[in-house]
Image 1 (cartoon, rainbow, N blue to C red):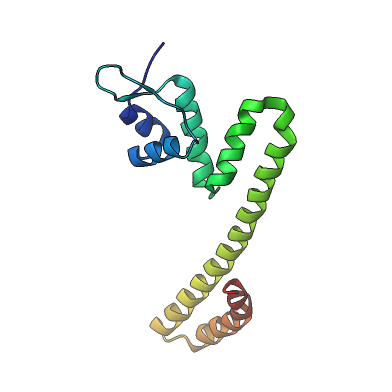
Image 2 (image 1 turned 90 degrees about the vertical axis):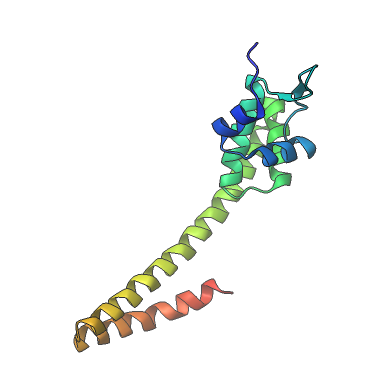
Length: 146
């Protein structure tokens, strides 16, 4: 059986060593085997797989409790499929909301850049157009702050 060091798992999962230790401490990973002589953690391939799943969930903004549930459901297999689906869809909805907010922010930035570009080129018609576009974006922008 191949064992991996914490450095190996950190490199391959993208999670920092302190995060791996924390995830073990809170029960998301492990328990991780220890080298009898040194006491250093020795990860199995399954531990690496679990760490990679956690790294993906973390990157998507999934919280610790949902990670814990997700990991427990992975061990339960098919009987937990509906709950896994619901967790993932709930977070997909949250990501969609974030994307919509980011689109408004992007629109605002582009219009402001166009406004400054028009000023840079002393183009009053383009500046007036940018102001009109800005006026249409401002209510959507304000909504993102609520």
